[in-house]
Image 1: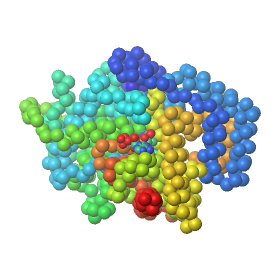
Image 2 (image 1 turned 45 degrees about the vertical axis):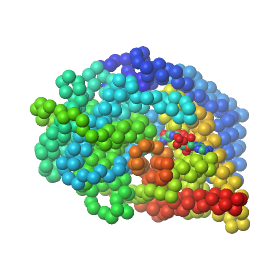
Image 3 (image 1 turned 135 degrees about the vertical axis):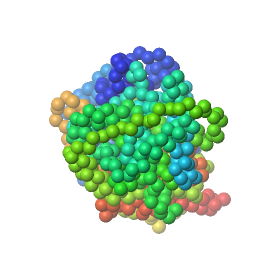
Image 4 (image 1 turned 180 degrees about the vertical axis):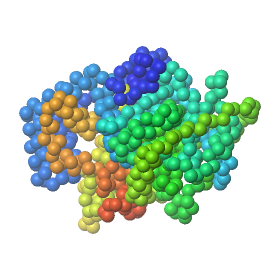
Length: 625
Ligand code: COA
Ligand code: HC5
């Protein structure tokens, strides 16, 4: 926690302020202080590994050229100077990377947060079919989130582990009572969870209308789900009109356009107060209209898209405030899930919160609460001037283009889960990543730069680094697999070697020794020192290495849910998976505007690759017996 908690407790904490630590009592502070600091890897190690990582991605000629640039970078002293700058930064800050990462990966990124940055989660479909059921479930879910919040506030959340090491818990303090705010050059994030009088309300949206719902009694106890249900009914009853301006659509726009529209919007005092209420609220609950009916086969993919963007301006996209860190979505037909703004936290803390909430919603109601009359939830009013109306119309148009452009395919791989790779003494995550390499190679006849998120939470304020899944070993395997002249036993050996190489890269990454963030740091150090950008960063090899046609991530959860996000390049795929013991939930995304990509096709190749790899191992085992 704690690094972002400012000394003045009266103001919301802006994440854009330089990271500084303050003295706060509690076991988390002791825990956090016990965590190691993110190291700056040795320069030569990163440069050598960079050259190895380029091998499967660029031609011999390009590689030789880059090799020369890397040598110049080292021998000229430029690299050493930047490295010294990074080491100085590492001594002066709690984490040399986290503030830079927050800025460059999120707050300075100008594309809409919708599809391009905010991930979605689909929860198991609930069995209600009407408004009563919807509101009952939403009330229980809210109670569950408040229960989780009390564990954060009381510091009773169990510390998490990865590879036997304790993890940084800071992100749990960033996900509630926080919100992104658009700015003309870069955005910011405000966090109200540590102010003197933290917020006691949530935001509820229904039919594009926003409400402030107080979820605590005057004695600071949270409302029970019975009480919340009654409040939700009141909200429902006062927002039946469907002809309202979808003000929330503004948050779906390109960040520069949204920043301009935002300044317009908050010129009006009432609008400003309403926006402030949303920003301060603990989280948002979106009571959505039912999803359009589709076949069971299509349903899963449609809901995933719905979680990512809301379905367009005619459906539920106006029923959101996409800058809000956490938005739970409960639709009338039983579809539910969440969308979250990525700047403050990674997926795993969100998954932990969801696991808690889903389990909570399954518990039977034990206590009947006394029905003390509660005040009417406050409707948040907006004055729609012609200028604001114009901004909404423009945002609608852009959003609808984005909605049509997103291609999502969700599939459940049912033949096996983590069990099969484990029984072969292989890392399940590495096995899945190697299967992805095989799928892509079969589709395109070449490998591509592939990103997998690796957690850096073993370090204080750690976020992520990149596992580069396209490796020399993965290429040897996929080429061998496609070569009829290669014997099965040799294919199995190549497969095992590729999986082990991936697991070795993972271990290196989570220990802070991967190359991507270090290279980024060297580049940003050059910018900060006002020296010219070194040639290694202007090189085509670098551009190729950073063009991630496959952007992937594993987010494990106990709940049988599907997680998804958009591609990071126009001709790429986003692949998110949740491996369970006996099956794997996948969501593949792509853009329809790109003729070369197709989410369902990659999904199909991925299913085949996973099955083929299993069969190969089984067959070879049998022939050995
Ligand atoms: N033989 C048998 N079992 C093995 C094995 C082997 N060779 N290698 C691993 N396993 C087991 C593990 O012990 C583990 O067991 P569990 O299910 O009982 O926990 C399980 O297989 C999974 O391990 P593995 O598949 O290797 O992956 P991981 O859990 O170590 O995860 C990463 C790998 C990269 C996903 C993880 O290190 C990470 O960084 N996670 C965070 C990613 C993230 O932040 N994503 C979201 C970004 S917003
Ligand atoms: C609920 C699933 C969230 C997964 C989000 C995720 O993996 O984000 C990655 C974060 C990072 O720093 O690697 C980015 N990515 C979506 C582009 C892979």
